[in-house]
Length: 422
Image (spheres, rainbow, N blue to C red):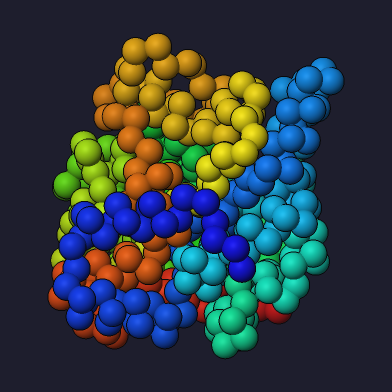
């Protein structure tokens, strides 16, 4: 397959930061190839081909609205033949077998248009990329040299609160559609729990306790990544099944609202769950890079234990614009919305206000800086093999590395089974 633009430069930056010995580099890369590698919460690559740029430029010139342009970009990333090949090539560069990926989740339904779009993608790319519902299916994909996606939701969809059964009916539908993990709150407060960006910290509601019991019965894993401290502790103490903070970091190392305290990490580990360490540079600390990420992994292992830590990028590889055609201004702005958000949050002079959903905007003290290390630097998603090399350099045994880069999340996903037949 053709080399994906930008991958080589990201790899060089990571190697310069790590400076592995030839022995550690060779062993880490071999170990990465030998393992079933699972991103505990991440995003599949986002292609950007010359053909895509030309089509979007033409649509904008013809008067397409911002909403129409956004839909066209999404459609092309999931359907354009050249984009699909670039998508698969980026997966190949990462050496990742499977990703637990957000597929939407809305009130009143167990599926979303985003999830349906993924189902169409699987149809186009099968068997190279497919949906996985069990660890066995992930391992089968690895044996065949293929890739898999496990659905996660950024919220818990529920029906009207006329009766409890009406409220929780979408949970069963979601599980049957392949969803295995759900956020109880996303930054803001909802009927279930408080998010991490709330000033108050009310914890898990009575409805939340009832809903959690049904999630345990259905086989859905509660994800506390964006939940507030008390909500996370309440959930960990009440759950009969493992819970996760699938993508977070260590608050002891960097005081950010998305990070978890040692108390929260221990409580999550006590359920048999895990904490995944994300690659968002601005959430890891000032001037953070792959070395800072490894520091967070080390701390999480010391606090939660080697069986309860995973890698969860919370990113995907956004392919840079091709050099042979210039994107129009609208496309250029659309391609990096989260970088714009971080720039605005950090107080960067002249940073445009990001057009993001109202789900917990970051303030200046939370933004830290506008680092794009996870896009163009040492923490780029395609650098996954070097994350494994970094763990080897930190002295982890092969068996412990295998747990961190895939084994632990596979174990937790294996618990996502219904207590009774659905």
